[in-house]
Length: 58
Image 1: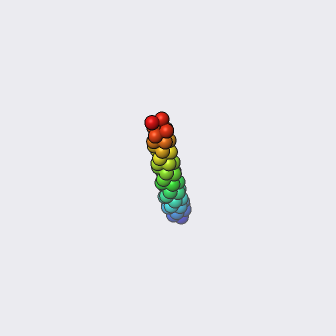
Image 2: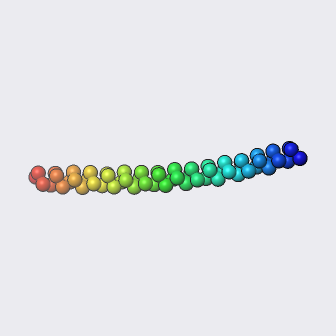
């Protein structure tokens, strides 16, 4: 009886841990996508300002 309860608790813990891991992975993927988006945006702004300044000085 006691071992059955421990086994059920271990299964619940494993299930909860897997769900937590899935949630963390989802958050990390979203953070990577946002970081990549903002890096791309920053690069485009810097390139645009560089070309605007060089064409304005010539």
